[in-house]
Image (cartoon, rainbow, N blue to C red; front, side, top):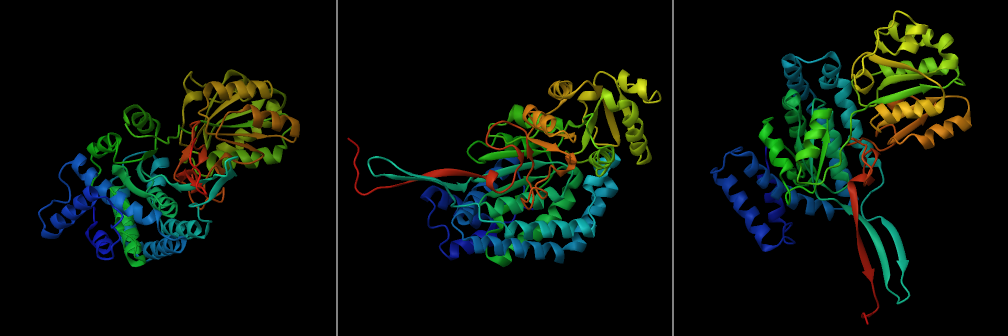
Length: 458
C-alpha cells in the first residue's frame, strides 16, 4: 500500500520541506492535495505510481540524511516494536502466501514465517540500531600545500529500489539498513510473498510514524505486477540504485534492462574444498552444515571438491553423513570410482545452483586443480577450504576470486548478521563499490568538504 499523506503532511507542517526547490515542493503539494481530496487512485499506472513514490521517497530521504543518529535509531527501535505488535497479522498474511505457494520445498522454507523468524526480524532492526552511525564519517582528511583542508565524508546514496523474490524478511532487513544509512527505499517483493511483504511494511510504517519520521522512507509496490519491475528498471532520475536479490533470471534481467546503476549478486555456486590435510571430523561437521543447514540460502555449498589423496577414505564417510540428512548427489567419474552408487553428474550439474538437498561432487588433484574447478564453474560468491595446512589455506584464499573465502568454516557464514552487520541487503559479487554481504557502510557513498582560509586559484 502506498501511504504518504500523513508522513509528508507532518513534514510540511513543521517546515521539513523548506530545503526543497520550488518544483519539487510544488509537486509534493499537488500530490498531497490530490490524496487529500480523494481524486487519485492508489494505483493507476506503474510508471506514474513509481514517479509519485520516488518524489515522496526523495523528500523523505532528505529528511533522513539530515536526521540525527538518535532519530534514526529511535525509529528502528519503534519499528522493531511494531513488528512484534503486528506478529499475528503478519503471520496470518504469510499463512495465505504459504497456502497459495506451489514451488519447491527449499523455496517454501524461505517463504515461511514463524514467530521466531518475525522475532528475528525485530531483533535485526534493534541490532542495526546499535551499530555505529555510517553517516558523516570522515573517510579521509588532508591538507594541500596552499592550506586548503579537504575531507571525504560518508553520505547516503539517495533513493534505493530493492527487487527481491520469495523471502519476506528481506524487506525488513533492507528497510533497517537503508533507514540507518540515511537512504529511502522502494521495495518490490515477489508475488509469492506479496501479502507478507505488505503486512510487514504496514508494521514498519506504524513504527516510523510513531518515531516522527516520514512513512515514505520505506514504501512497497502496490501489487506484484511485473510492470512495476519494468518501471523501476527504467527509473533513471527517480532511483539512484537498484539492488536485485533473487534467482539468476531476476538478476540477469535487472542487469540487462536497468537504466539505473545496479548492485547485483550472482547465484551462489559455492564450493567446499576438502584438502588432503583436512581434519576428518572437522570436514564432516563443516560440510554437513554448509550443505544441509538451510539448503535454500545463497550461502549453501553446492559442490564438494575433495583431494584424490583422501577421497578413498573420507568421501564415503562424507557421503553417508549427508545421505542420512536427506541429501542426494551428482558425482564425477573419479568420485563414482570411490562410491559406485553415486549418480553420474551431467555436464551442467557443476554449473547448477541447486538451492535444494542436492550436492555435486568432484575429485581434484590438489589446490591448483580445486582453484581451476572453481574458476570454471563458480560464481565468485562464497568458497571454502578445509585444511590444517596454513600455507595451502593461504594459497587458496589468495587464489580464489570470490567475494567471500573461508578457511575451516561453513560457507553458510556468508551472511551480514554473522559478519556483525546486523543484517544484509544482499551478497554483492561484482567488482565495483561493494563485495560480499552489503551492510551499512556499503550503502553509503561520499562527498568532499573543502575548508579554506580565503584561498583563490591562480
